Length: 276
Length: 295
Image (cartoon, rainbow over all chains, first blue to last red):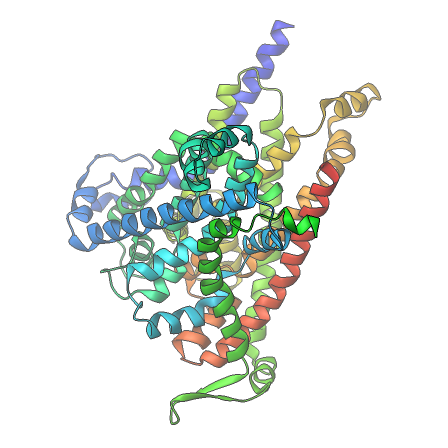
């Protein structure tokens, strides 16, 4: 019996390693390339592991103001839209969870349907509206758009999170003379911390990785996020692959860190968002 | 009358900020798309004028529209197939009895990682692999003595971008399927095993029927997502070579924005929105029906 368990363990672990290596190969190869000196990226047959490790690709690309600017923009846009999402989604989720309202069911179905809304359809009016309201090439336009498309799922998830918190706790606070808003902020929100973290991470990842609207609504690196900086590198005639990969690694690292910290919440979020 | 008295309208204060944003940023522009699809911008007058269904009939006669629609359908159906084909077996693998859950969670975490790469980042990673003298072509040359121009050959390009799209998004579907697998009562598998069913028979006759709603939901989500796909393919090919990867979202972008034909672009938007409306209705129906059953 112990023998069979050991065999099973060995099989599962080696298959797991094989699958992980296969899936991760593009990322691994990219990371390894980011540590190669220039001559080595053009060598044939291509090398897998750098013969001479160097961090020069990182220092050269991160010392360019153009790229630090993309990162600054990316953080500004993503963090603002995350805060806005959690704020609006928290309020709306609470409203849906705790109040008896006319047309509530239709509104909730509307929010559910919006999760699948094809943002690309609004490309033309967004461009024209941004022009008309002086929002072309501004942070605000991108923050609002990122918030719009993450908000339905955030609202939906926070609503189901609030549903799982007993009403009795706030009722005590309300009897003591608290307003509804005060009850949400000081009683419910602390209990729903995990829900806020999960949805916040979701909103951040979406905003950080958004590309299409950033491409359409910005010009040059002054307001554009990292995705635009990465995409413009693809079309270049001769690509400095080591620096490009260094930029790719640095652009993805924040998400990997966040993911490792709150993996459980993200998986929960994905599962309950689409299925419940 | 009694029911209405129990409504607490103060709740709308909580909904208001989100609803105002969604009305201004989705409902209003969506209305604009419909409106503009019947109008054309004339630069002499500096204003939009009504042209009726002119732009829709132009669209039907535009061969580029049909090219983009055909490519989009191939891309969408291919992506759905690849996503399920990769995600389902891996989800089954993670759903097996693991002696140590921490190890399983570690591997699961690693396999989810591609999902974190932004579309342009994933495009660059694969652009490096797809190079004429890159590692994949080196392997192909060693094994078969030929190499492939993944993004330069019109007969390969669409498949190549589908492959990258599969790599980035399969983790999402893998997590969804894994969640579904974990909701199957083990009793069902035990009963089938007692009846002498093999592993494959149990997958076909127990697992898949149990996940039917979930799999349908996934197909709808994936259809809606891939149909309007823009980012990844735009970064890698911009629709080329020879328009072999030219998707309907590129058509929308080029006509509506690059060529400043706002009205024509809006007509394309309406066509896409109608495809999506079918998906959205199916999605909401599936989910509400499923909730009704479990509640």
